[in-house]
Length: 69
Image (cartoon, rainbow, N blue to C red; front, side, top):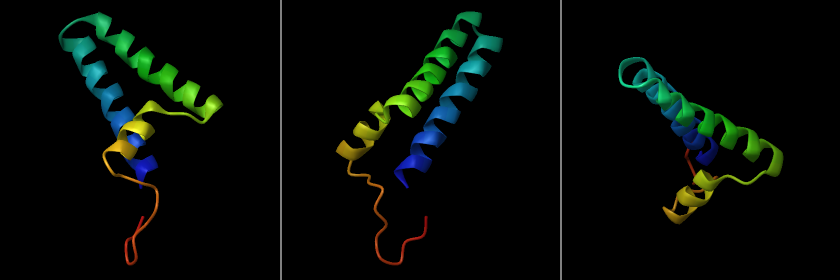
């Protein structure tokens, strides 16, 4: 479940930053690049800051009995 949340947050950040780049300031694309760089880094190192944040919030990858992914 945590992986789905991380992907949802990353996708939302990319879409929001693209909208901000179009309607506010083109420099918001730097945020898009930052998200992409973090996704690439986490795929290479298997470490993700958002994973750690979600763990501290009590969200885990384990499914509870009767819970669907």
